[in-house]
View 1: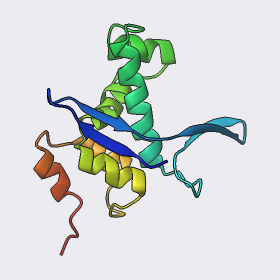
View 2: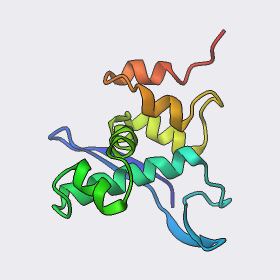
View 3: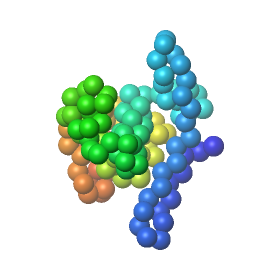
Length: 127
């Protein structure tokens, strides 16, 4: 099954990324691609959406409550959840592994332009 991006008539976006949780070295890992390769960026993207869903479903009031429950710094939750602002094209490129090596968790967590065209410019080769 492939990843899918749908844009509904009301403007909502649905992103479906087939994934499984696998145990590796005592840790659960999200594996989404047929070759079983995961990247830190893909893992962080999945984590960001899982955290957003937990807040949307009312399990936590906000990122600070989530951070407290996870035992992590609220700024980590906030920076990670910025990944939910990525354009569908950016998400697709991350899921398929089709992005430049210069694109990393750190670079995306620091500053993500809100404009999707500006985000997608980050995927263009430099030079």
